[in-house]
Amino acid sequence: MLKEKILSNSTAVRTLVHPSVRKSISNISPDIDSVTPFNTNIIDWLKPIIDLSEFYVYPTNGITEGLNWWSASESRSIKLTAGDYQWVKATQGKDTIQYISVPSSIDGNFKDIPIDMPVALDLAYVGSTKINPISISKNVEYVFYSLSKPFGVRNIRTGWFFTRKKDFRLDALINNAKYYNYYANQVAEHIISNFDIDFVYNSYHKQQLQICDQLNITPSDSVWIATSRDNEYEKFRRTKDIARLCLAGVYNE
Image (cartoon, rainbow, N blue to C red):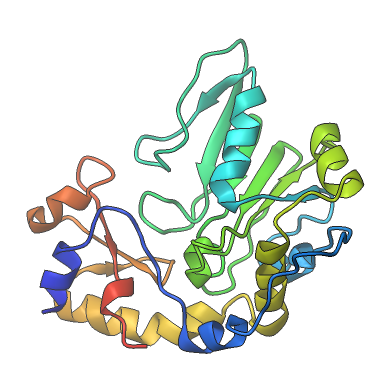
């Protein structure tokens, strides 16, 4: 039954909301009327894994909106590895910036970040792994993060866009006009105030190992993912021979 459930999945990784997280956010009422400065504790929450204290941070409706905002104004060639997040498209320009997801959207595993070119770093799966520090240098110019993958709240569209240089248009929109998604911000700040960055990993890692052992597949660094070279999982291949399998649907809450 486990294999059949995995095979019936779409090729997307659709994670779930842990019952204690669902209960914790269920009574949050949207702030409809107030005009409140944007504030976030996300940089402190991420520090066990990555230090973004030198970056400006702006809220986004999920990582994808941040990627859209960045790529729409990026004049350089955008380079990415085949099989990485399919929403990002390679482009041509005079110079080059590397887009990379860590842990990788290809297989859910941590990987090295290039240090010899500008980098746009996608952290979508951070929060679904054990605490494994990610070292970055000055060449990392942009960072994208949300709680959609680790905490499963994809329909609420939490997210943050980090940049080393102030984005004056976003600054005017968010910090001056105070236009941003208040409800998504409320939910996001509530989650990171009440749940540690390795909560999801600690909740599901034992099941991940048991299922992978039972099906003879390989657990990824992200607790939501496993990989396989078996031809039976061919439709989930992100590269020539590696299939990325979503385990969320077979976990017991």
